[in-house]
Amino acid sequence: MGEIVRDFVDKDVFFKMNYATSCEDCAHFDSSTVKCTFGYPTAPHLKEQQLHDVKTTGMVAFCRTQEID
Image (cartoon, rainbow, N blue to C red; front, side, top):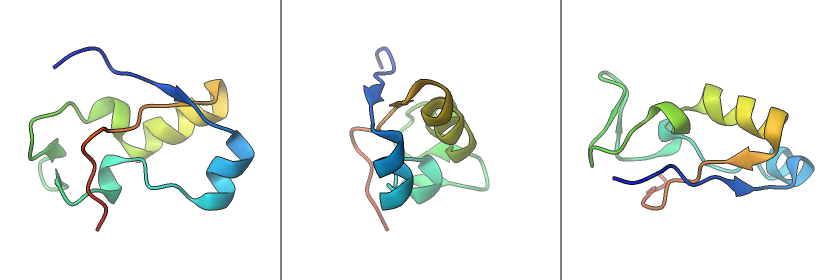
């Protein structure tokens, strides 16, 4: 697995639209182990980290394989 890619988002739109961008929003996230069933790193994609990143940098680490419930 390579480098975590972060994309710019418009903060106002991000919060208005309530985008599903975190592991906790994904069907492949095992909350009991805090792990991705595909084996991808979860730390940069956890909700708390995503919210921090978008508030401070305007960037979000979108998971490229996220499946929304």
